[in-house]
Amino acid sequence: KMSNTYEWCAPGIPSELRELQSIPTVICHHWIAGFLQAKPYVLKDLETHKDTEPEEYNRLKRQGIHALIAVPLFEQGVLSGFLGIDNPPLENGGNITEILQLIAYFIQSALTRKKATEKLRKMTYTDEMTGVKNRNAFIHKIEQLNARIHSGESGLVDVGFGIIFADVNGLKELNDTVGHSAGDQLLRDAAGKISKVFPPADVYRTGGDE
Image 1 (tube, helix red, strand yellow):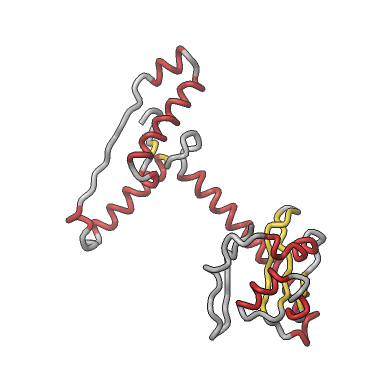
Image 2 (cartoon, one colour):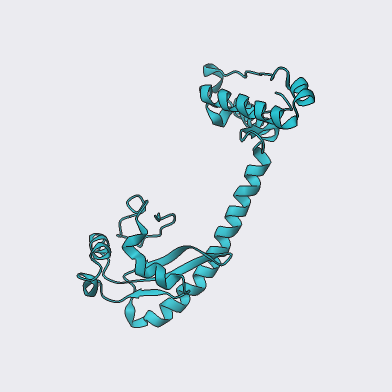
């Protein structure tokens, strides 16, 4: 399946982002066949596909699309998506395709950087073993709350909040007698149980067994 992740609409054109989620790729199987060969897909007249590609026709027709150009996006040589423009001025179709292919290169570079940044951020604030947030994330959250309190944010102090600390008992003994893999599993199990009781976004591993 495929989903629309980014969208720009000209004035007067309604957004379709919410509607275009988890769309079966079979609808545009012939697009993908070309994309896998690094070829653009150019649809000059939707009406010519009414009988041959009825699923594609019905979906595009509903959106008011009568023509389109789409070019593939590749991440490390693997097809990761596509960039398209609806109802382009086809008298300049050749130039638009070339420009779109150039833009696709820069967009894919930006998406790759964004993914790398998100991965780095996750590594910075996530405990790799348990999957819950780590001490860095905990300190950052405390700093955020302090800043909100000192700024006098309405309602924050009145509502109040608290922190529950929990230690995993017997971790050292388990590590010494059974092995560190068993101790690691104990920590993962504890984190999993805590995350079932409290919102996972508010669960932190602040130390070895804390």
